[in-house]
Length: 135
Image (cartoon, rainbow, N blue to C red; front, side, top):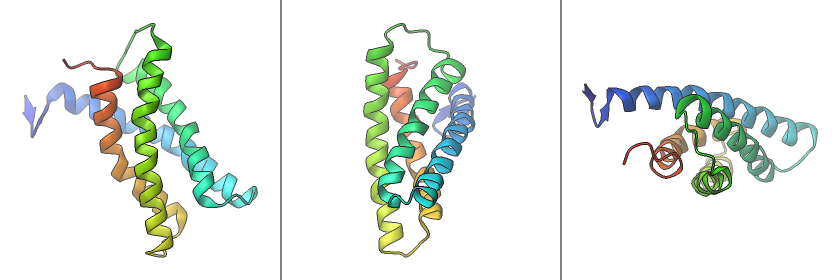
């Protein structure tokens, strides 16, 4: 069964990705707030650090729970995952900066907005390049 451009399997995969990415996002947001508010680090730098922690969480959860990927080429696979994620980080940082500095939106709200926008890039990139389950 197809829903839009997604098959039933792709839709399930995307929904699972959203749930697991939500856990990784919680890690990202909590660290962003802690680093910014308690350590006094500028939100832009704190967001980069927290994103990497969320990225590591996302990799582990999606590799084993969602994509059920058993590849033993962990270093190669993680390199591809990191490349996709770091592209997502660049998008995330640009959106975050623009929303905070030009629109005057609080950095936490801006981060949440950026996460939702970048979610689609990350899912596509990880499905297509990192885990490559559809050929």
